[in-house]
Length: 384
Image 1: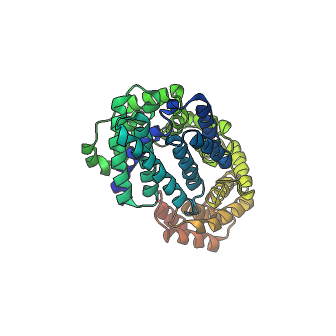
Image 2 (image 1 turned 30 degrees about the horizontal axis):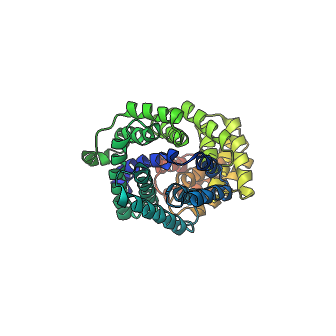
Image 3 (image 1 turned 120 degrees about the vertical axis):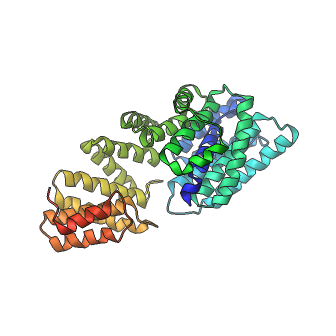
């Protein structure tokens, strides 16, 4: 079901990230300063400070959608960082509806008003993305289609705007990259203009350097692209480090940086960073949730196992496995940690315990040939 809509949702929704920050130049310098400051607070997970900034923008410009849209983005990030709850869904949806109402009032008078078009496209795009995360596919597709249509109007009005280049760059890149990665969505391409990956990367890099408000979002998208599509961990790691250095309280950037250190094989560095993350989880800092704690224990255990510290590694793996109870469906962490626990028990010559965990893998969802691996280890003990 998810793959049926993945291209439609990803392309259309990510396009509308460009409407996050574009065209706030219509505000005066005092409000513009508040927008910039509040945006920093959002990404640095200082939500109360961000809300104070955006409430002031709303008071100064009660008929402008900017302040209301930004307030909605606070709740978007709360949803993103609090993966274990849905309590922020309703406040987010209410604020998005407020943005759309304000934009509609403006467009009733001037249907070419660029600011209103941008913020309406952004509001509907983010709401569609939210619906997609909640697997409300019809609502997601409806909002996504409307947002895409509005975004096209924006591009006609201001095609050379560097903030808009975030949207055009995302479209040009993902219109090619998503069908390459998920061939089942290629038939949907008949409904969209053709993309150009290299042009998309050029536009995104230009937006990351020159956009007035979308530069940060462009860097976030480039991080995702170089990590997941271009498979260039060096560039991805440099972007992740830059983002984390700028927004040190953001757990999303923190996790990305730590994962890329693992991917690069920098064992000492990634163990250190994951231990820092685990401490923040224990201190219950915003966004350092049980999912993050489980991931941290998994990677710390992995580093210890590679060093041959099997008893310490086993403690972390067992805790990570216990933390997997939070999953609504089998995850790669659960599968791998059971294999690693079995491996360690084999190395400790506890064959019965090892077999118990390998057998558990066979009851879990297949992940990266996990069933084949488990069957091999059931037949013959793991040896390093």
